[in-house]
Length: 162
Length: 201
Image 1: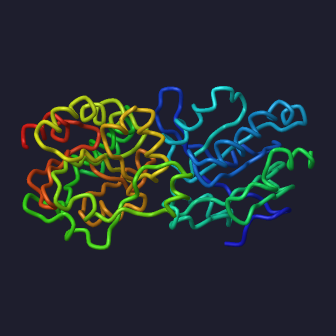
Image 2 (image 1 turned 60 degrees about the horizontal axis):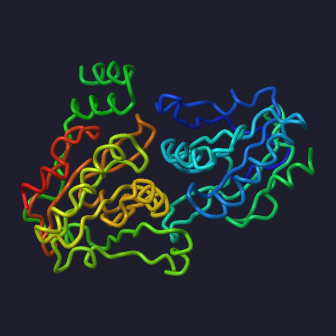
Image 3 (image 1 turned 45 degrees about the horizontal axis):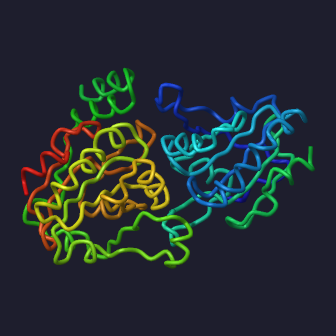
């Protein structure tokens, strides 16, 4: 699958989360994004350093600013199950606006063309690090790292596009 | 008939409970491991990933642990569970082993090992949260190869977990399985808890 690019319509897909009663639920990406301005950023793995210490905090810290510029949703996705995602999300108690969604089977990541093979690191198939700005399902900005490095996929970079 | 019952079960209450009903209705194929099996021979070319931080992963060059290193010449109690950070695993299964660690040591057990189909970084963070990584050695079977080899996998897609491990425990001496307990339903801790296996050592 070719990687998602500017001008593409994002595919629909089902992602998972735990609700307030800790029950697994599913949600369609299109239902969250249709008619809205949405940032979707992807990380290789919950509980890994760059994801936890740099990538996610950047979006949490600048969430108000992003909302002020008309962003309706900020969504973090990773190839992890929803139990792990929720527990990882809970390690960011200051988070108000970032929604953590689980792509446990890596299907949505595959449909975005953004898979990353981290088998030799003990992680299996994961997602590249990326950040997308999506308006009414159309990709306006696609900042995709070649792997897990942290350069173009930050909150700072995507704010420049708003 | 089983399918209809499973669908009805799936519609009700919590996801884990519905999965356990489905699992109980469908016949589970027998595990490839039984009392008397040599666990290392049953899973050749399989290694596990010791729970660790990413930095430890880097400095160890992401080394894996062959089963031989875990089991050879040792008395090991090993238990497997469906998932880090899930309810029964966190609230019942691991704590039972953690609380009884002194009793295991008193019976000559060299190591108590916990394994799940999770990556080693998630296992590490979870073990730290449970304050259990001094007592118990946590390993990640990140691609499920260990559990697939032993035929101890279960489809927990209904609970959005994918292919995972059954809940099970075993007492293994120098690689030979002396006792093996596998739950019928992954959400139960009826036979796979610390108290049961303590009685089997």
